[in-house]
Image 1 (tube, rainbow, N blue to C red):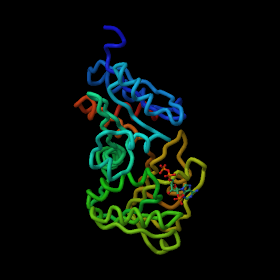
Image 2 (cartoon, rainbow, N blue to C red; image 1 turned 180 degrees about the vertical axis):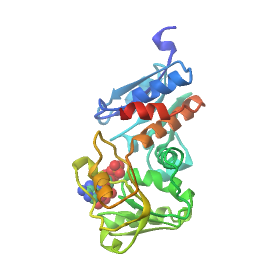
Image 3 (cartoon, protein in one colour; image 1 turned 60 degrees about the vertical axis):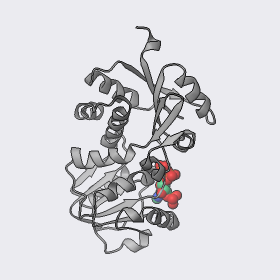
Image 4 (spheres, rainbow, N blue to C red; image 1 turned 135 degrees about the horizontal axis):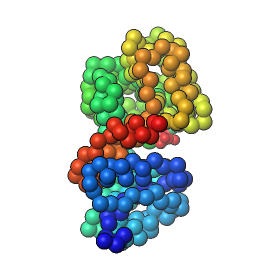
Length: 274
Ligand code: ATR
């Protein structure tokens, strides 16, 4: 079999060298006995469309899409799943018969990590989501489908939080507020969906915001606990998680979309941790 006969998948982004997706998908392929190649591809800004065309004509069957191309992928998809339409972004493209099918697996990744890997309960809980950018938009629908008692979005720019609350109102009890409105409120699960951890910043959350047995979840991950995770520890959060499990779970969902089989995720999560 020549290299060209093997189905090829890739993650595209800029930058991309840091991506763990090739490692994760290669492991999934091994675990499920699938013959495929998965690489990381650096794409120049403005070149996504021509890259997809060329990739597709060279055994390219699917792409994961990361920063800054999730909106490009959304616009270039010839068909979108409903969840991708509502998320307004795409992280998974399937290339089939000249069609580009767009989907998003970030939300499923978060839910699977919280519920399956960490046995967290969302139903009837008070949830706070911090941030109102693309990353948060992608996880609101699956969170609300788990029927929390309430889901509040708080964001530095309050109008963006309000917009999201309006957009997802049909899925459950969702509302928005500013950081100043959080005094004396407590939450069972606080998810940091801001990019603040990247720059070592902490969203201005008040003290005593975690209920007993609360969980703090940073959608980011790094070698060391993020500043949000360190703060959550000081504040007494019972369970403190980063986004590594979400990364692996969203990859597993993409793999399932492409190959129709579910790969076991625990070993690769452990491997990446170590
Ligand atoms: P992403 O696609 O990763 O969500 P984004 O759309 O640029 O990126 O959104 C970044 C989010 O992080 C926003 O909610 C942003 O708040 P604003 O809407 O007010 O810009 C939030 N954010 C970034 N840096 C922050 C900081 N230092 N403190 C609080 N929020 C921050």
